[in-house]
Image (cartoon, rainbow, N blue to C red; front, side, top):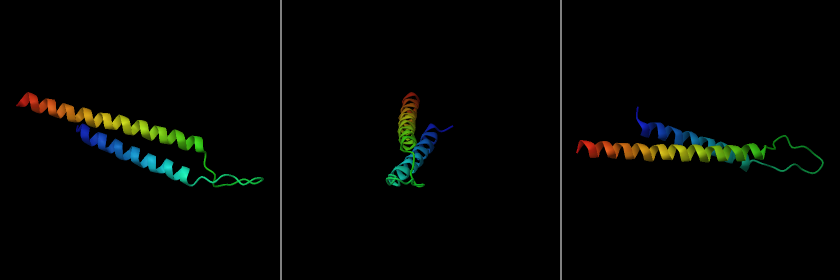
Length: 79
C-alpha cells in the first residue's frame, strides 16, 4: 500500500470534480425575464461540488504530506 499513490489519485479525483463544477458554473446563463432556460444550472449544487472538491483536495494533500513524513521517519530509523 503506497500512501503517496493513494493521495495522488485523490488529488486527481478532486481536480476532475473541480473542473466539472467550474464548467457548470461557467455555463450558467440567467433565465430571461418571462421565459425558462433549459440550460440553467443549479448554482447551489455547483458551489457544493466546489466545496467538496476543495475538501477532497485538502484531505489528500494532508495524506501526501503524512506519507512523506512516514517515509522520512522510516529512513531516519534505518540510518
